[in-house]
Length: 156
Image 1 (tube, rainbow, N blue to C red):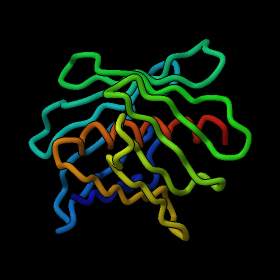
Image 2: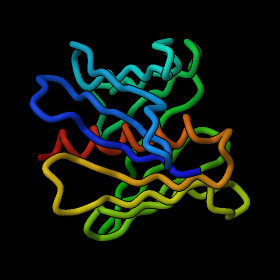
Image 3: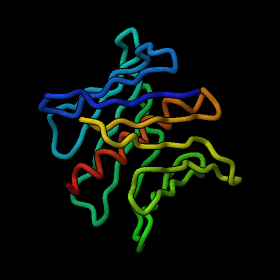
Image 4: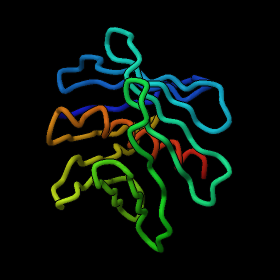
Protein backbone atom coordinates (compact mmCIF):
# COMPACT_ATOMS: atom_id res chain seq x y z
CA UNK A 1 0.00 0.00 0.00
CA UNK A 2 1.29 3.44 -0.89
CA UNK A 3 0.42 6.67 0.94
CA UNK A 4 1.31 10.16 -0.22
CA UNK A 5 1.85 12.53 2.71
CA UNK A 6 1.62 16.26 1.90
CA UNK A 7 1.88 19.23 4.22
CA UNK A 8 -0.70 21.94 3.57
CA UNK A 9 0.62 25.32 2.54
CA UNK A 10 -0.06 28.49 4.49
CA UNK A 11 -1.22 27.03 7.80
CA UNK A 12 -0.19 28.16 11.28
CA UNK A 13 -0.06 24.61 12.60
CA UNK A 14 1.22 21.37 11.11
CA UNK A 15 -1.60 20.27 8.82
CA UNK A 16 -1.29 17.40 6.36
CA UNK A 17 -3.37 15.51 3.84
CA UNK A 18 -2.66 11.83 3.24
CA UNK A 19 -3.73 10.25 -0.05
CA UNK A 20 -3.76 6.69 -1.39
CA UNK A 21 -2.35 5.65 -4.78
CA UNK A 22 -5.58 6.65 -6.54
CA UNK A 23 -5.46 10.18 -5.09
CA UNK A 24 -8.26 9.63 -2.56
CA UNK A 25 -7.92 11.36 0.81
CA UNK A 26 -7.35 8.62 3.40
CA UNK A 27 -6.36 10.71 6.43
CA UNK A 28 -6.08 14.34 7.43
CA UNK A 29 -3.76 15.54 10.16
CA UNK A 30 -4.31 18.67 12.19
CA UNK A 31 -1.80 20.29 14.49
CA UNK A 32 -3.22 21.43 17.82
CA UNK A 33 -2.07 24.17 20.17
CA UNK A 34 0.14 22.55 22.83
CA UNK A 35 3.60 22.63 24.38
CA UNK A 36 5.56 20.82 21.71
CA UNK A 37 3.92 19.17 18.74
CA UNK A 38 0.47 17.63 19.01
CA UNK A 39 -0.85 16.09 15.80
CA UNK A 40 -4.31 14.53 15.56
CA UNK A 41 -5.03 12.05 12.74
CA UNK A 42 -8.55 11.76 11.31
CA UNK A 43 -9.81 9.14 8.87
CA UNK A 44 -11.73 10.02 5.67
CA UNK A 45 -15.03 10.20 7.58
CA UNK A 46 -13.61 12.71 10.10
CA UNK A 47 -13.25 10.32 13.05
CA UNK A 48 -10.15 10.66 15.22
CA UNK A 49 -7.99 7.55 14.77
CA UNK A 50 -4.61 8.59 16.16
CA UNK A 51 -2.48 11.21 17.84
CA UNK A 52 1.22 12.06 18.05
CA UNK A 53 2.29 14.04 21.14
CA UNK A 54 5.79 15.41 21.71
CA UNK A 55 7.15 14.92 25.21
CA UNK A 56 8.94 18.03 26.33
CA UNK A 57 11.81 18.33 28.80
CA UNK A 58 13.58 15.21 27.49
CA UNK A 59 17.28 15.03 26.58
CA UNK A 60 16.56 13.66 23.10
CA UNK A 61 13.29 14.10 21.19
CA UNK A 62 10.50 11.73 22.19
CA UNK A 63 6.96 11.35 20.84
CA UNK A 64 4.10 9.30 22.27
CA UNK A 65 1.79 7.58 19.80
CA UNK A 66 -1.92 7.00 20.50
CA UNK A 67 -4.28 4.92 18.39
CA UNK A 68 -8.05 5.15 18.92
CA UNK A 69 -7.42 6.93 22.23
CA UNK A 70 -5.03 4.33 23.66
CA UNK A 71 -1.28 4.63 24.07
CA UNK A 72 0.49 2.23 21.69
CA UNK A 73 4.14 3.26 21.85
CA UNK A 74 6.82 5.88 21.74
CA UNK A 75 9.35 7.07 19.17
CA UNK A 76 12.69 8.24 20.60
CA UNK A 77 15.62 9.66 18.71
CA UNK A 78 18.88 7.92 19.60
CA UNK A 79 22.37 9.35 19.60
CA UNK A 80 24.09 8.58 16.31
CA UNK A 81 26.97 10.10 14.39
CA UNK A 82 26.02 10.11 10.73
CA UNK A 83 22.68 8.51 10.06
CA UNK A 84 19.60 9.27 12.14
CA UNK A 85 18.31 6.35 14.19
CA UNK A 86 15.01 6.19 16.01
CA UNK A 87 13.88 3.56 18.48
CA UNK A 88 10.22 2.66 18.55
CA UNK A 89 8.82 1.03 21.62
CA UNK A 90 6.16 -0.70 19.49
CA UNK A 91 6.30 -4.22 18.04
CA UNK A 92 10.12 -4.20 18.24
CA UNK A 93 10.31 -1.75 15.33
CA UNK A 94 13.16 0.66 14.69
CA UNK A 95 13.84 3.29 12.05
CA UNK A 96 17.04 3.90 10.15
CA UNK A 97 17.52 6.88 7.85
CA UNK A 98 19.89 8.23 5.25
CA UNK A 99 22.52 10.87 6.01
CA UNK A 100 20.45 13.61 4.36
CA UNK A 101 17.37 12.47 6.31
CA UNK A 102 15.22 12.09 3.20
CA UNK A 103 14.75 8.33 3.19
CA UNK A 104 13.83 5.93 5.99
CA UNK A 105 12.96 2.32 6.58
CA UNK A 106 10.82 1.05 9.40
CA UNK A 107 12.25 -2.36 10.21
CA UNK A 108 10.38 -5.03 12.16
CA UNK A 109 11.69 -7.14 15.01
CA UNK A 110 12.76 -10.01 12.75
CA UNK A 111 14.45 -7.68 10.24
CA UNK A 112 11.62 -7.47 7.70
CA UNK A 113 10.78 -4.11 6.14
CA UNK A 114 7.51 -2.73 7.54
CA UNK A 115 7.56 0.47 5.48
CA UNK A 116 9.84 2.50 3.25
CA UNK A 117 9.58 6.28 3.44
CA UNK A 118 11.06 8.65 0.89
CA UNK A 119 10.90 12.42 0.81
CA UNK A 120 10.12 14.04 -2.50
CA UNK A 121 12.48 16.92 -3.07
CA UNK A 122 11.85 20.13 -4.97
CA UNK A 123 8.38 20.57 -3.46
CA UNK A 124 6.99 23.69 -1.81
CA UNK A 125 5.99 21.75 1.33
CA UNK A 126 7.10 18.52 3.01
CA UNK A 127 5.95 15.61 0.85
CA UNK A 128 6.67 11.96 1.65
CA UNK A 129 5.82 8.68 -0.03
CA UNK A 130 5.14 5.86 2.43
CA UNK A 131 5.22 2.33 0.99
CA UNK A 132 3.73 -0.05 3.56
CA UNK A 133 4.10 -3.81 3.15
CA UNK A 134 0.98 -4.70 5.18
CA UNK A 135 -1.99 -2.26 4.87
CA UNK A 136 -2.84 -3.00 8.52
CA UNK A 137 0.40 -1.16 9.48
CA UNK A 138 -0.39 1.98 7.42
CA UNK A 139 -1.77 4.13 10.26
CA UNK A 140 1.08 3.13 12.60
CA UNK A 141 3.72 3.90 9.95
CA UNK A 142 2.05 7.24 9.18
CA UNK A 143 2.13 8.31 12.83
CA UNK A 144 5.83 7.46 13.15
CA UNK A 145 6.57 9.48 9.99
CA UNK A 146 4.61 12.39 11.49
CA UNK A 147 6.75 12.16 14.63
CA UNK A 148 9.98 12.19 12.59
CA UNK A 149 8.81 15.16 10.53
CA UNK A 150 7.87 17.03 13.73
CA UNK A 151 11.28 16.25 15.23
CA UNK A 152 13.01 17.60 12.12
CA UNK A 153 10.85 20.76 12.21
CA UNK A 154 11.88 21.34 15.83
CA UNK A 155 15.54 21.38 14.79
CA UNK A 156 15.09 23.76 11.85
